[in-house]
Length: 236
Image (cartoon, rainbow, N blue to C red; front, side, top):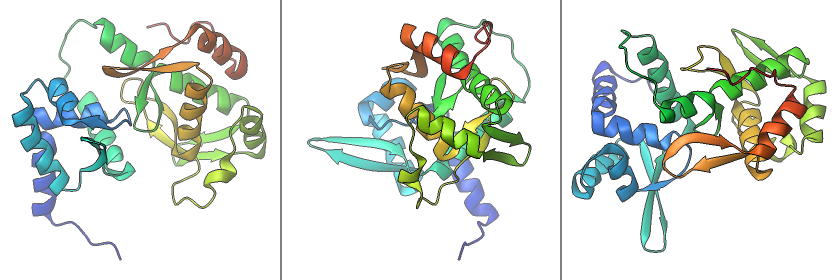
């Protein structure tokens, strides 16, 4: 049975996430990787001692979970539900008052391709969703996304076996509103599998200090050929 959160509980969680230091840490973890306290403190621009205090509060609130490996302790988002909440706040923030600032190289890279917890986001993800929709591999609507039989066959040919996660409680295929593009990209098990497969093929590569994903020369070629991306898909 799911309990209904009280206004006080909502306010407490919002207060935790609303702190600038903690918000920076949460955004850093939206890349889907587990990071150490030191790495998260550097991302937030605070000392390790200050960072540890913030992390402890978020662990206590079930926003983060910890994983021990040897002498190191890693932090990650506690669940996909937490990631969805952060992503929703990003979309709300993107619709807020506009503030002019130059688009730097890091922001440009993030807008082209980035990881959104466990799936691809940014201009690349939207272009892939468009291609899958146009080729009748998925059906996109405001209510969500549906993987077709043709789409399942396409993914199998691409090296993705969705039967491995058949017993998962996660949705097979769902939409996620892209905060930079303001259009849908693909999440759920299909979205996660697409990120895993493109990383496995070496088409995409993670960056050490950012959620931005680097598109390799092989990826640039393969993505255009397999997903029939238009020549201008990455033009900003």
